[in-house]
Length: 80
Image: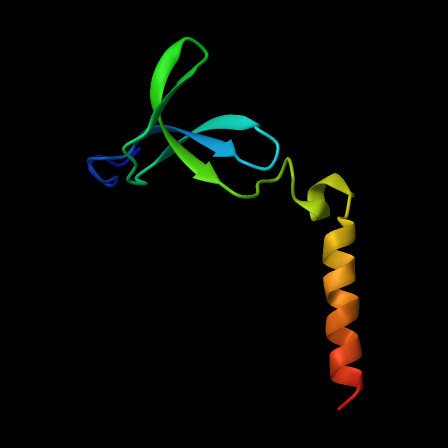
């Protein structure tokens, strides 16, 4: 592996999916001041709105709210 190719602040970070509470550990340079305990260790945490554990493409589930918004948008455009 090449040396000195990663930034100095490249560190383990927990990403927390706020829609379902799932968390996963990865490495990142994201800036954050919050921390969380994960698997017995304390890590910086980055809160995200959606991840592969909650995204409809990966889960196969869709939300009724999204469908309703799409239908109302279609009706507005079709009246033009």
